[in-house]
Length: 429
Image 1 (spheres, rainbow, N blue to C red):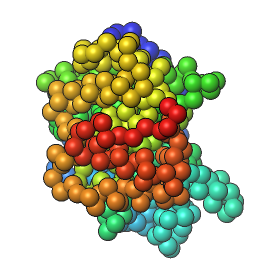
Image 2: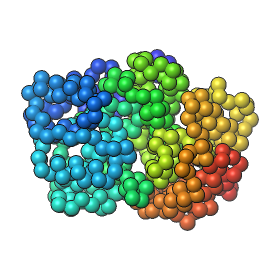
Image 3: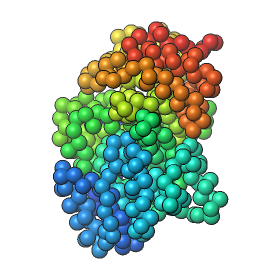
Image 4: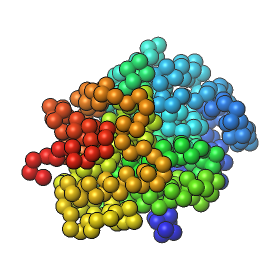
């Protein structure tokens, strides 16, 4: 396992260089990052009582570096509701900071990214619709002659989304129960810090959610990566390392939440998950998860759905599944060397669901309170939305909107009851 840890560290250093500080006890590097942009900043950090020690430590670091906090805001609620983005955008516009420091998990950092976009590109009008999709922010910036947004320094405190390293910002319209996505290099934080010690107080439920979200990043990217592409070897190394770190460490961490070494291992894995989605996009499970925000956390939604997409994709990804099978060896009863296509996919999918059982995680949708046919309908409709078409295109078995009902619906029906046999694979595969 130690060789995997060293490999993870090497990959992350090669990826972000000196713009990203990670490890155990590196929070103090925040000060030098802020000073690169000036001695005044807007601080976004939880105002809740439980966050007071972290808040005090962050403010102490800023004061020690003679950095003035010109305004302070709380963090966004789970899944980054539109309203929280609008409120933060108004604050940014009013104080015009030299930089923005956001200390929080994925929802908090996603909110800071989206609010930064609104404050610079849509002053006076809180409308995110023009920015959803891929490359829209940069396109609008170019037309307006705007070279950059406010400098953003992201301090991650939860091992999960990887928002501190990525070009993605997820925002939720609570009235529709639908999450939408900004995908643009312009929203990547300018500097990032992830001190894995800050995750020691994260509860078991959030620990599992975050780890399984990152597992899904690595898995979906690996499934969708082009084996003929020049960067495939790198992509495979990143994804398989991240997956292995999570599969081998998460069950132990759930039993020992204060274990610093296990927290570091999961933190490295989640950062590799973030790296992976900068190389290729996620696909089926992430796409559908956006439609389940009213009943499921993001990590749970992806973890439930990925075994079923594994079966759907299986005829197109046999070589990849055999490598995944090595990682899941102790959860597999069959001799997978003798299996092909859908049968191979089902064997790997069963291993994934057994892993979920081991960490007391759901593995089918009918386990979830409030789930119903309306969620399947919502997910199918969202999959046909042009703003989310990249997720369909990223699949190892790409779909166009006209094929969604024929092929995606059986996946969701199978995920409802756990019956892999209901999944329909493409003809000729």
